[in-house]
Image (cartoon, rainbow, N blue to C red):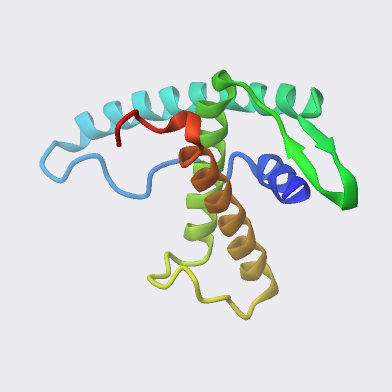
Length: 140
């Protein structure tokens, strides 16, 4: 998982902009203005997440244990940016693969296979973080 998560963070950002138009009913001028605002906001968020990613990897959050196993340590404040980064890469990989319905089918192309495995690493990481006991609501 260590090299997988590092590879994911190094691929960020993968998905730059939304694929769909903001509205089907607004006139073109309004859409362009709103899209410009959205792109600017998304760029600010990507820049913040990129700064986080660089700092996160610099502090080397992986601790080695016996038999080539690693423990990833991060704070509660790290959770949201890590989830945003892995989600960006996960969606970017899915887009690169052509938005397949069956996300479990391993592509034959080596390039798409890499995207598949990165998407998988992102999903495993996201599930582990979201399902961690400290992130569960009490009584549920």
